[in-house]
Length: 406
Image (tube, rainbow, N blue to C red; front, top):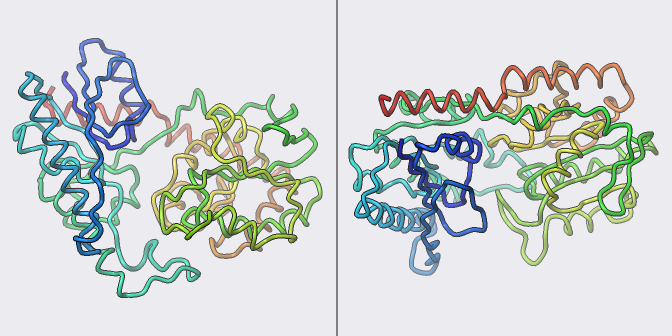
């Protein structure tokens, strides 16, 4: 089989699928993307330069589509070059979010396209104006609606779609859902798994140490930002740390902004630390930035209570991996999370906007060993039933065979 993948940030959502496909030497795999340092054996990369924003001459509502159009043009150009060199894929797989696939059928009209539909934007009922601390005026609603231009053009291609959760599927208009298949994303259960030995040893990140007799509370996000509840988690720290003198907290995440607005001249980390200055014992809290994957896994395995917070938005991979590691989870009570967490069954749900209740739920987990153990076991069982990466890959391969008739 000849595969063409398209995603501006190689390998994107396709790391585990690519690993599976490269096990078969008969597969020929091309990947069109922007440049980065990542690489993979037996995957040939074809690079295009990211378009430069032209802010001054493009209407605010049209700027995302302008960039998407340039990406679509660049990717189609690379595809045409591959075609001239004799490469014709049996299937094209890629992410629709950046518009890269919009022109691809002009090059290969008869090749099936399986596009990743991640999120359909709305001006109410989802992330927009969920958090009253960051209100959005109706003057910005046209830009939110315009963010669906690529979604709508992708649907107009009349190709094939996938999305990882039922909640994400229901964000799309009802008329569009029939063309989008839910293919759950999983975790590597052989790697993301409980390790009782970690809980009996001294855990360290640099000079920050957690003894086996101390309680470790963890929080993980790609970046420390309001969309992932960093501000409310920080505001929960005073009550949490006051509640037990043996608690230490590690909050992992970078200082960029993946979702939402940036702060002028500072980071959300610095902003929240300044707001809370003098209100909690900073020696008991570590914000290490982004950490190596093996350290991150050990952190989850050692965690006594793991906090996962998000707006009504796409659930993170870290939630899946925390479940697989058997974490005792406190999570925000929003629909994108309740697809994974049932309150009192495999985690505890809390109001996103209520730091005292977040702290109270964490302290409850730390003080009730029986509940903690039960939720840990249930989290792992949920992952084994619903989040096995082998099942995710099998579902993808079944869909690929269906589309390519092989």
